[in-house]
Image (cartoon, rainbow, N blue to C red):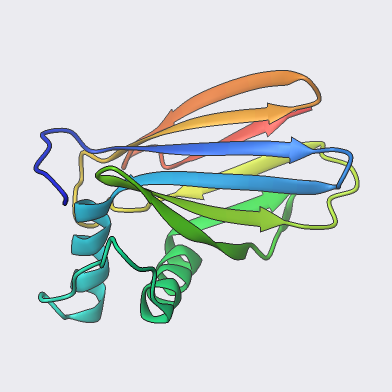
Length: 150
């Protein structure tokens, strides 16, 4: 069951798997906030996320929402992000994504506006791991993108 919270924070975890040449992305968002954003976009205030079962409808809504609110470019080229699925953890959900065939990561730029249309105070904590280095940024409505160089 979801619960009320007074802060609006998401986590964006990115890992460059050099061996498999894959950028792995995990997004952690509160279920109730995500539910509200998906309902607002669809014009369906009654939309609810069933925390007991991940439906094809939820996956399609998430894919569409991510397509418009989460982008990554690698080495200055926009990349197609593959949606892998989601899982629930208490009152939050993890959304798993990946970008394949990344031979050499020199720069990665991401823009994350998830939930900001519903909650202007939404913040995203970005953790990036590549080549044994850990980097981080905080994204907000006025600064919704970051870039890391390697």
